[in-house]
Image 1 (cartoon, helix red, strand yellow):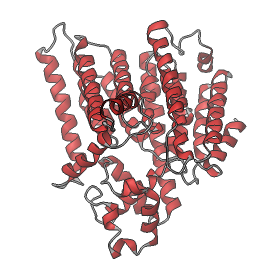
Image 2 (cartoon, helix red, strand yellow; image 1 turned 60 degrees about the vertical axis):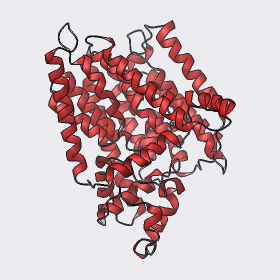
Image 3 (cartoon, rainbow, N blue to C red; image 1 turned 30 degrees about the vertical axis):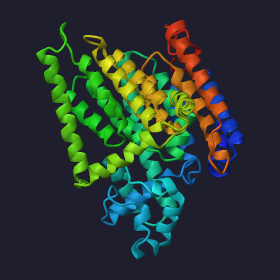
Image 4 (cartoon, rainbow, N blue to C red; image 1 turned 90 degrees about the horizontal axis):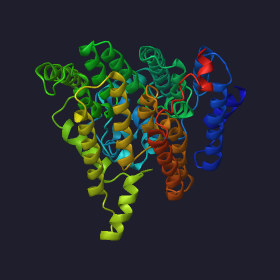
Length: 450
């Protein structure tokens, strides 16, 4: 325990992200120490308390691994000052006296980075609500804004813990599996330390899943809308519900269609309400323009796309990201549709497994995979028999090697190592040892929950 405290203090208050090998060594050590604690026989409640105690170490730390939080605070500042964060580019606002005359605005602008400053915000309305709450309380005090955002994330994680344990209980899975998420160094560093709002999304998604299991469909639909309004990614899961809603032997029966469309309508209405407080006629076009760049311009820590990019260079002698980014999205969508129609009806367990596979494939075909993106499939993996996401949550930190140089050039050998190991583990779990399940009674880690 003392080792973990020291490691996280070092990362949070002493380490520069350019010191990649030191960062990865500390991160790997934290993983090893966490795994040791899971096998040590310590009661689950104590390890849960430890996980939140470790998160509190970062309470007063200024994030070093990511600069995204400067844009979070900037968006919150705009909202509080009466500006719509979806309609104004930071680079344009900083040409006005109102903004460039305040040192705090200049700090946020300089620190958010050129890429963020030149693009419209795409953070959904629930995230914007919390960003504005942070600035409304913290004002021009950077550290106070950071503390408020951090506390919001910690409350969200408490929600994930509470609801996640209930889902595990309903599925008759060992409750210890929740540690694969809340004690995971990836979650501690990317959520608590770096302030990424994936945990807010996951808190809503967890509620949606619990209500779905209980057949409280309207509440589940509202929960899903809340997750999408915090981060857009859970929207991909909507088609997967189609076969889950089938309670008869025939596909496309009237009851199935009625339940599915009713769920979709409630989700859509909830999303419209969520966006209404920031709605503007220009919002959709500017939001889509920035999102399209994600598929046509941004690339980081990709796997299949990098292979396709190399093929494109051999074929056309230039980067074909515009084509291959769209191809990846189409393949992911096609796979989701396939999963939605493959079976006439599926169980709740199978639904969760399909969600895991859908999000995994999406990121395998994506042009950009930042470490914090993996919190979504990592969370879903807790409720399945597959554990490859735990390994990927360790390997993904190899991507931080890009920040070790001024040009942010990626080390493709490390990326190949990351995805090579990941592919091997997925093949092993799915094809070579289908009954692998670290949560079964024969696993030593189960002893924690006894």
